[in-house]
Amino acid sequence: MQNARRRYLRRLRYAVQWGVFALVLQGGVQFYFFAGHFTRGGAPVERPPLVDGFLPIGALMSLRLWVQKGVFDPVHPAALVIFLAALATSALMKKSFCGWVCPVGALSEQAYRLGGRLFGRNFRLPGYLDYSLRLVKYLLLGFFLYAVLVKTPLEGIVQFVHTPYWKVADVKMLHFFTEMTAFTGAVLGGLVALSLFYRNFWCRYLCPYGALTGLLSCLSPAKVSRNEEACSRCGLCSKTCPSHLPVDRKRRVRSPECSGCLTCVSVCPARDALDAALPRRRTVTPLLYAGLVLALFFGIVGAAKLTGHWQSTVTYRECQVLVPLADRFGHP
Image: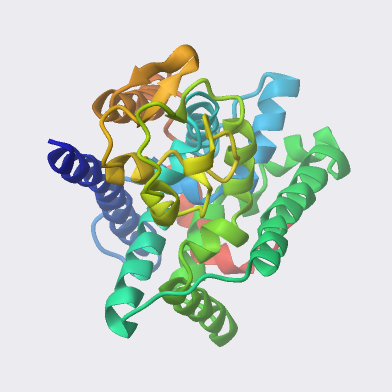
């Protein structure tokens, strides 16, 4: 029974991860043809708003604009919606955006598994180095929060959202991948190579987005919880935890590094010993957990669509003028 539960839990998470990845990939291909229509010709293609998810710094600026001015960014509203959905999901369901939704996390995990198959093993950094490198993503988060929330005047953000640069920021992000420099290619290649040997290298050490969702996840009422009476103390939960957390020594896993992936739950051989749970051990079954994550994230996206906060207001005529010139616009 426990073996069947393990398989179903892992398959459930993989299905969610790769389902989201397929949506993002489809959106990326569609956006490639959308932008290409204005530079290479061909039939017009509708712009997929979900590509705004790759503009998190702009989304942080939009969040400040919305909170302080009550203005919801009309240029890339989906960037703010996806950002809010990620934050809300993390605040209520641990860092589940990273563990269940983020396509970068899915690719990173796949790279790690591939590395194990190719080289017969993976590696783990020494404790002192692992801890030091984990601080990097928090330092990066601090830099961006300072730059956007403190250093940048509010009126500067008001002006920024109406600049040509912001109107084609999505196109510039596309060109970052399709027209990358040798340096960019080397950096990305290095990150991929490191991900083959070290589990979730980018997510664990460098992602400021993950640092923010991790800090918010400390507020989450749902956390992995261990029943000491039922625990067999086999240590499998700690050995398989992607974040290298000592799950077998915790009653509730509160660490901001926990992604809520439930990998530890999936390998636990003892019945009712390890589960996601609310306070007072009110268990959240894996199926309910996954359902709540998806309901929260896509519920916010759906609400944005219904209220007109999803599609960009940048017109076709503006795109005709701005998209071919995207690479000429520097940051204001």
